[in-house]
Image 1 (cartoon, helix red, strand yellow):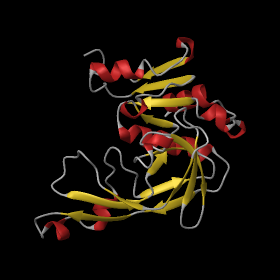
Image 2: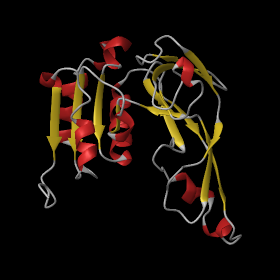
Image 3: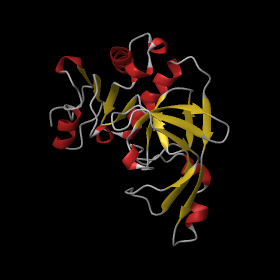
Image 4: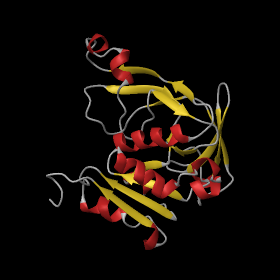
Length: 222
């Protein structure tokens, strides 16, 4: 969509491939819901020149009803992307900015929400922290078993995947505690609460470096 392309170019410019990690980690696009950030991350990663690598998860469920094992086949589970979980098909490129989804060593800054850039290996990913909490810290990631904390499903989803996601765009909630030099906010849907709006509007260091894009809808202003 034109609005999304304009926002991506406004925050990351047309010269995305020429930008240094130090520039990229100080920029972000925020949106109220997880689905939109995943779409925008895919669009941004597609602009990068490196070869994409897709890592697939192994999905299963925990349920007291044994019939659920037949009702919800793996193909159905693969399409689920609860908040705070990586997707079944995790597409990465060497050196992209990612966000850790679990706490590994909070004292060293290796915690949920930390930003890093990563190198891809055959069976693991090495990520170097670029967040202010512990710049330079390194974490080596393998696939681990993940389960969402709060999701309205009749079963517990178990996903074995690398605990990270691309972080050029992130949800407003995930941005809490971080500040950026360039911020784009995409309101394609109403924010979930007044507090969420306040969080989004306080993520920048300079008010002249924030851009807000909205879609006109019947819910706007309500």
